[in-house]
Image (cartoon, rainbow, N blue to C red; front, side):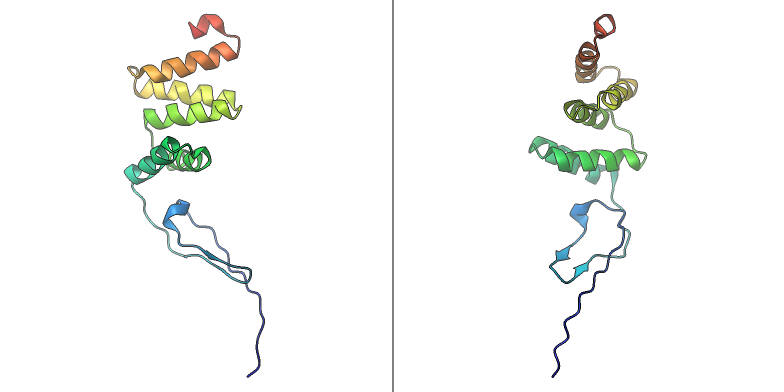
Amino acid sequence: MEEFKTKQKITEILKVPSRLCIEWNNENLTISSNRQTQVSKEEIINQAFKFHAQGNISEASKYYQYFINQGFQDYRVFCNYGTILKGLGNIDEAKFLQYESIKLNPDYANSYSNLGNILSELGQLKEAE
C-alpha cells in the first residue's frame, strides 16, 4: 500500500469565543467547526470575570471585547475592561469605557475611582477631583 504524505490546512473564521471551539492541531491538519454557536450574554460575561479574577488578562480582554462587539452593555464590563486597557497604555479608550460605565450605573464607585486615576495620569487634576 502506497503511503500518502499530504499536508492540508482547513481554516475558517468562527464567530464564537475560543473556549467553545474544539481545536485539534498538529503539523499537518487543523480542523475547526463550521457552525455558528449562540452564546448567552451571561456566559460571555462570566468567562470574562473568571479569567480576570484568575489574572489571565489576555483571555479576559478577549471576552470583554467580544461582549462589547456583540452590542451588549454592562457597567462592570466597561469598568473592568477600561482598567485593563489603562494598564496596557490605551488611556483614551480606557477613559471612554469608564465614562460609559458611569452612564450605565452612576452609583458604581469603582468607575469614578478608575476615571479619576486616568484623568490624574493625563494631568487633568481638576476633572479628576
